[in-house]
Structure formats: C-alpha cells, structure tokens
Length: 230
View 1 (cartoon, rainbow, N blue to C red):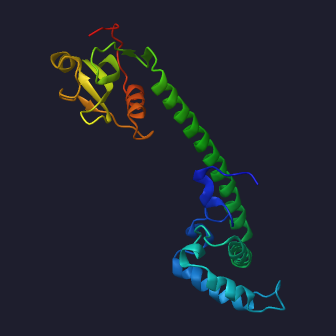
View 2 (view 1 turned 90 degrees about the horizontal axis):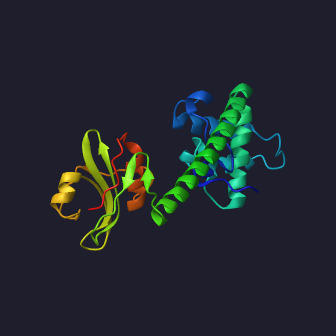
View 3 (view 1 turned 180 degrees about the vertical axis):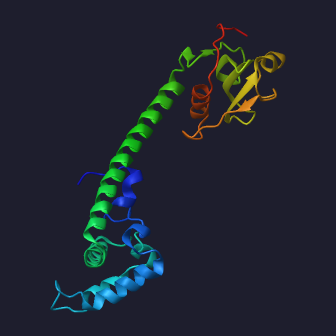
C-alpha cells in the first residue's frame, strides 16, 4: 500500500472524512447519530444470520467518528467501523452526494501530495541555504561581517532604508535572526546582540534561524547594494 504524506493521514481508512455535514443532508452531530442508530436495526441484508451486527458496530463508534471524523481503533475494529459507515452512507445518503464526496476526497489527497512535495522541497532548500549561504539572494548581498557572533548576514536597501539581515549567536549561544538598519549595525561594531532591531524575521517555513532568515530575504522587495566589508 502506498504511504500517504502526513497531511493526508486524516483521509485514510473509510475515505469519508472530507464530507461536510451540510453536503450529506445532515446538519448536526445529533442528526448523524440518530440516523445511524435508527438505520442499524433494520440494516441486515448482508448479515441475516447476525441481525445485531450493524447496531453493535454503531455502538463502537464515538460521536466524532460518526460525524465524518477519522476512525481510531485497532485495525480489525477500524475495518468494522469503516464498513458500517459505508453501509449507512449507501442507505441514507443519495448516490450523487456520495460521488461528490468521492471526487472531493480524490482532489484533497492529490493536494496533500502536492503540499508534502512542496514542503520537502522547501526543507531541502533551507538546509542548502544553511550549509552554503549564496552570495546573493533576491536582491540581498552577502555581507563579510567582522564579528564572531555573526554566522551570516545580508545587506540591501529595504524600502528606502539600508539594512542588514543576519543570523547570529546570542549571549547564551542560541541562534537568532534580526534585521537592523545599516546605521545601527555600524554603530554597534557589527554586533547585532546590542543593536536595536529594525524588523524581526518571521517565517511560515519553521522556527529555525536559517529558515527565518531565508524567508525574510524572500519576503521583501529590496534594492541591491554593493558588497560591503565591515
């Protein structure tokens, strides 16, 4: 079986978790539970020898599982729950709605794969950036900073303000990221630990210092500056 990316795990087992309750005709948790419990006693066409099969299966399920949530239990019991949901859906939800759910499910799984691939590409690019920071990136120029605390720094004219964005070691050895004005950088002898920040570096690519710096460099439209040695 093909392993789904982490973001797609909520779609496995019964393949119905993407169904919005409004689309199925059931608008509230209680309506789904009531429908399942009223359906189960008479739904014996596949289990004539065990008329309580579906009812016992419904009783195994939590309200969250009933309401199109991920099925959680051991494989054998999860399989039983999945069969119950599908049997209930076949009897209580219109065919066209089920087909719409299936199409939505396939679309969501494809998107999950695309998202996972993009996240992996970003992770590799961040690792490459940390291992070997390029001389230039999106208008920023690498700065040859003369200070032991600075691991890497870039300069650019950021919206009219000559600025330096850097990864540096704090007093306790933790890697930090900041953007400073070039004036503040010079006034503090290239020591970002004591300089007033111009901007904090924020990223959606992770909390690591190099991920923050890379995201920061790619976020702003800047004017390049000549390579400096400070």
